[in-house]
Length: 550
Ligand code: GLC
Image (cartoon, rainbow, N blue to C red; front, side, top):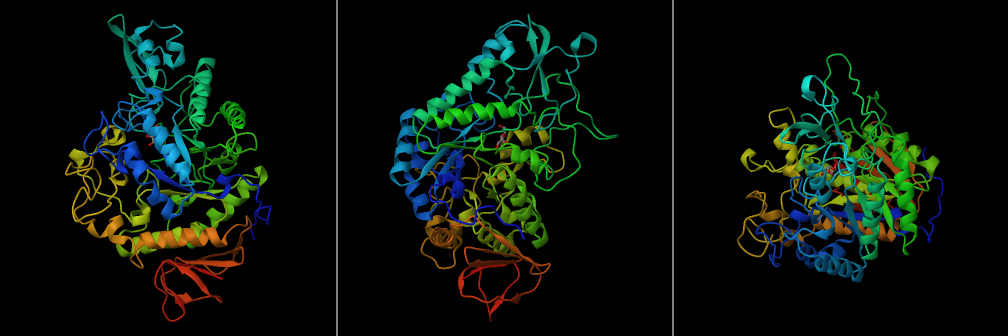
């Protein structure tokens, strides 16, 4: 049915085209407790470095680190105060250098996060903007505007923050209520004005700063957001609807599956592509296939494909599987829709089931044994697809979303959205990794210090130490799948098969891959079992199970 254009493996293809990338959420991966600025219970860069051999043994190709730059941590690092330095709580620049060189020694590539849509309110530019007058060059780096209504007491337009509430905050000018600034996220994250050339120049120098230090690529935060429609006009909303800057929290945004288009003057403006063309030229100045991957929650698959045209981004996250329900039909649509959308621009696909912004997929698929069986099946199918896959820390342990008590939640989205449906925030997928031991902090950190978010009391059987070497554990399953993928899967061609309503079935490189999303077991197709996501009995493929057959 659907095939990628080139059936032959291209040995000269850049490393990232079929890489498995492991996302490290810096606060929550591992802590050594060393370093002047260290805070008990918080992950740090030396902690990550100490666990890189674990990631090499897991079998991934690259590590993506969430932002570790100087930051007041209102959005846990996605509020950057200094793009060229390391948050003291996480370590120092030389810790970052040590991490990069250890990764490279182990054969791992390193991707860092770039946050260009907004700075922290503590960035020197924003401090200068607050201290300067309306109309000044300092204010012109951000989106300051006069308010509407009597005395400018109403926000300049009707846009809403992704985290809830108005996307505008008013400042004081000369001791009196003054201008408003735009923040599509938290009010501590003022949006930059990408129509101001100073902003583009600053980010080119930030890119070069990290490229010079040897990073292999960038994950670009909110890549569809940098330019807003120049007029900053109101968002048109249907009768009775409220305006919103809906994004990753909603099931609608970014899907490859087409839907009714909303009016979005704050997202996905054509000018943003010039930024990525410029960055592509910067990357090309450096040896070794440096890359960038867009976090772009666009409304259509066609506009997603625009981000990965040959002179722009290397990849874009494809959130469509992550957004799909547990359904073979939905998975089939995701695979064919993705390949069809990317074929015209020749980009390789990406796949992802979880990240630090969404409910973990074990839980999305129902939780408990069923959720875990489905999560493993979806992973096995995903890792057989051509292109690159992104894994989120802890999914290799089968971790579930944690119900963090309300009084301990820290996500700014929770703080702005609480009380609204679905507004619990994202803390539940960010609980620190359990490494070893019977009780919290499960080897996270150096001693008894409790992690910044509490770990469940029943994680003892899920720790790395508890799963390592145990046949059938989720950790050993991931290791086996990643090893088999390296050995067996190199081609870019995939053939979707019509195997009935309940099955996702495809072939790639002579392997048959079948996922049973139906309620009952089915007969196993012909072939020798290479790997299965769960036990197979009597030559049958149980419900919620996937298999590779040779
Ligand atoms: C991205 C990040 C998310 C962050 C937001 C604002 O969506 O993944 O964690 O809150 O951008 O930077």
